[in-house]
Length: 122
Image (cartoon, rainbow, N blue to C red; front, side, top):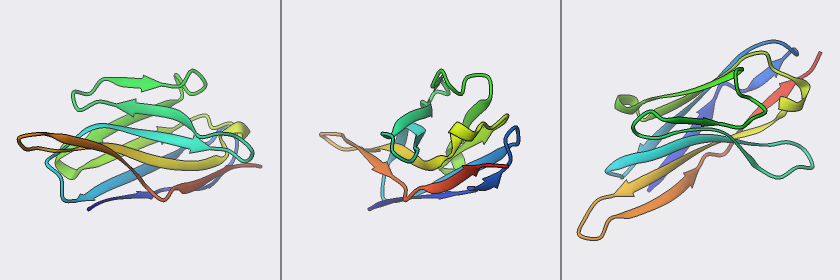
């Protein structure tokens, strides 16, 4: 069993900053890619940022230059630092981890956290 727990959401004014954390726990051998997704009211869930086990990052065009994703492999944790937040950043932010179970036939599966709410408003 694998669990992801997000933290750090809250209310922030436009132009402000907020940092999110996600800790992965449970039975697994390694974590491959990790990422953050968000779902705004009335919209579909979208990728915000992702990071591979090797440290390569990918960002949605809408957050490039403002958000930074990072991970601490020793702590099984992924972070999302959000700067210059805009009102359209209001959403539930979900942590994702692609987890590998090693063996004769390796098995990888995507796990999701419960989400943490981010509200950007004056």
